[in-house]
Image (cartoon, rainbow, N blue to C red; front, side, top):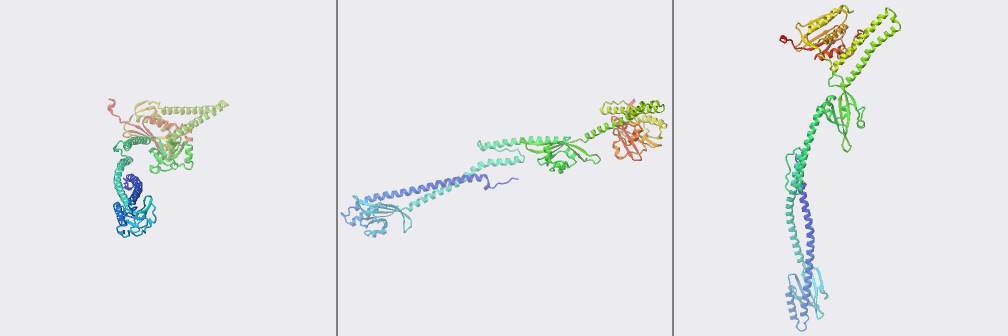
Length: 610
């Protein structure tokens, strides 16, 4: 929202006010000096004029007043009066002549004509010395100029001339001039105010346009430009402001592009990224980090990274800053059926050019599978070592016994040799199985695939187990439940026989004496499903997902006693994976287990062979 600036707070008003104040101060200073000088000059000139007039008139009067013996007194007074009347001027209020006997001989004041011939009582003419002074008229209270000039004839003082002039009139004229000056100053100030506002507006208008442009730039609008109206400093500033807007727009576009690129990179990263400020508060977190930590963005942002990673008890922000080593975190999985997720967190500090630490970046790697693979590798090595050590130990014991003389006993020696041979065969089978798994893992195994009737293949394997039932210590019965349709599939015959053998051997091993083994073969739209069900003890729920692991046995002692290597189901799983199929198990404890084998199937058409 645009905020309107009041006129009295605007730069326009401040510039105009400054201009007017400077003008007023200048006029006041000039006026003070002018009026003071005018007053001094006018008064001094007036006094000088009156002094000169008094000297000149006194000299003239001396000629008439000095011949008073030759003429009678009345004629002489008339002559003196005539001289005064001729010398009278508007500035002179009164002039009078006093003779040496202090008698008034002539005066220009009509109201005082009766005093002619009488004694003078004016205190200013108490002696016949030259006087020039300013006094206040007692009647009008106005300022007057008093001049007393002695009248001399042939060096002798014969009287005095008294002149009282109007000095107040001079001050009034000065006041009139001052009034004219003040009036003209007021008019000049008013005109100057208008000019100042216009000049200030011409200065502030481009500034206002730049202010509007700055507000538009702040809102992200770079479409408009400031008009350049001249080549002065404001014009250059407007041009520079336009260039600044273009640079900001380019920088904003570059930053937006980088931000979008960064967001795209963060969104598509397979690792989680969490960025914090210098206080350890989360400011950025990508989708992978939210998924790995199993949190919502709203709850993660502005939360302490120590709280987010749930490691506040063992670590502090200072400790991480001082030693940003990698940390392993264990977090619950979003899927409750899966195990916890193991995360490796690598910390890195965000530093400015000055070296100031402004935040942290934490990169989260999901190492659950790596740790699981590493654990499986360690478990595999341990299992292989254990499985090989058992027959080797047994073989060594019997060989030592034979070497110590047991070979001489005709009853014991054959038994020892038979056990040694069986253990050796077991190790050979185990090594062959391991080699098969190794070839499958490395991808070097080549299928010898051919089209066969899968139902006949299953019957072939089951027939062999029917023939072996009399040779087994434990009796069992095989129940067949097959589809009537002929099922032709492309498989490696030897490997599929190995898979069915493994499943049947397990069913025989874990079935009770006289138990029934049910073998079903059905077809779906895209698959052949082979299932083998026994009536054994079943598999505990916790072990169902582990039975296809290498060397894993539900009943380790029983399986090892019966010569199993613990690799049969693992090999079966790898064989079916190579064929594009699948294997899984369903089991209930003390009821039995059912192993399912699924193979891709495309119904056979007669015209294939035509």
